[in-house]
Length: 129
Image 1 (cartoon, rainbow, N blue to C red):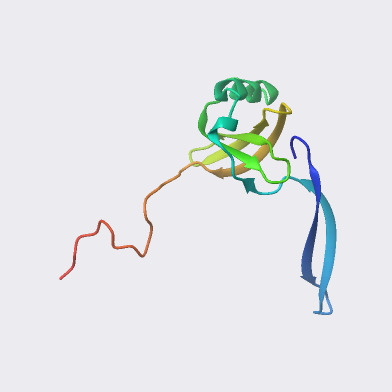
Image 2: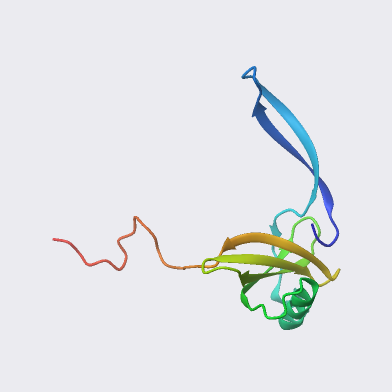
């Protein structure tokens, strides 16, 4: 995907026409998970990284709605994940790895984020008698 990659073996269980489970193995080159890191490891300028993303993907007028920084488990590299709005509710993620100057197109994700509670909580509701 980006930076240095490692091969991961993915095992999938599927049911064929016989109804019996069978195992399929495939080799995928990918990053794996998020590792713990210190804020002191963030050395590359966020704005400069986004300028490079915009140049690489030819999106000069793009504006990042949010940036997520994480460190991958298998490569140990810091990744900047810029979310750019492409519709009223949809964002495209653009990934940048400062160490390797690598780029990757990320997922399309919901732009709307909330830290509020949903559903089953009674917090903030008026008491009922």
